[in-house]
Length: 496
Ligand SMILES: [Zn+2]
Ligand SMILES: [Zn+2]
Image (tube, rainbow, N blue to C red; front, side, top):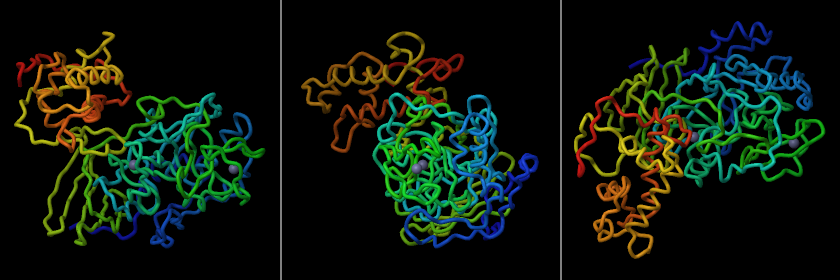
């Protein structure tokens, strides 16, 4: 078995890549590989911190209040906020946007303390170039601010000053508080569906590195997120519904909190929502198919090799120890799973065979519930084959709205007694002659809810699952390139 150093040092490899840029800025911080001291990780809450990283002196003296100025000083304010993390975060601005490049891996220990684990692990992501994080250089107050209580359940809503994205504290089922559900580690983060590490609550532990007068994150509308108090330590007073307010020295800004909403509870500023997330934003790239929840697992330790390419995650399952080791090499990642009986299996993924999108998994397994017969190798996803038949306005694009229209039409067609439940005599009855009508008949077993009937919700859920799987760029529409079929594809005969 490979020897793993006890000193976690994730992200160290970036230092080499960015040393020159940092040197040009005159801000080379201390390389942060030595001891990662966690202050009292057992303490409930979020304020645990890697005290080995210290900000370079110029940042500490950066006065609060610079942020309210015009173009150049705004850019200086923004880059100053990220400066303490210059060894792993690179920033630049154009006339309209501020860009942040990172690999999304923090300096601190990850994953420890999670009691609701989906078996994902942190892997570096290429948030660089056209895939960098961005937000407006000059935030603009929105005419109709949008709450994160009802929107933006997918993707990031903010970016921490260490280059780690922050997702909505409510996960994408629209109701679960990830922190209260035990999904987050001692620093408020976890790995998402693409093995992408992100926080779901405000990273208050960054305050000590950033300096008490500096923001710890930026909402993707461009407004800064400060800690629990004002830069001078005064309590944050008169906060609005998104935990933000305007002060003379800082202009509009948000504050972190220890309970929901934890960070910006919505967007005071202008953002674009597309497919349920702020747009644009970078994509994480999965190397392996999405994994499933592992009920009962508790993550107890996480260590990385000095070069941060190898990691060991220890967990218990039903009180028994188990371990997952993984290592990146040459664009692929090799996983070694040791289960509670001591048996070890391995798997190597290179990314090309992976299909799940970035972000968190839905609240139900993405696999089919019932076992299926062996697949015809030429078979194509149902949604791809039938998308254009449901394209109501015939513009060659299937939108979610068009799909939902089809779902409702089919449901109402089968629901003969209009009681909102499809029983066997209804779905076995006269067919609704449409693509989804045929699907409901053939796949009724997969559509039954726990009470053994098909409901509008269970049919909708399955339809959206197939839709989201085909919607590879997650824009809420199936474009022609997402529904084109291989040359020579022949539809299977009806009745299959
Ligand atoms: Zn998450
Ligand atoms: Zn304030």
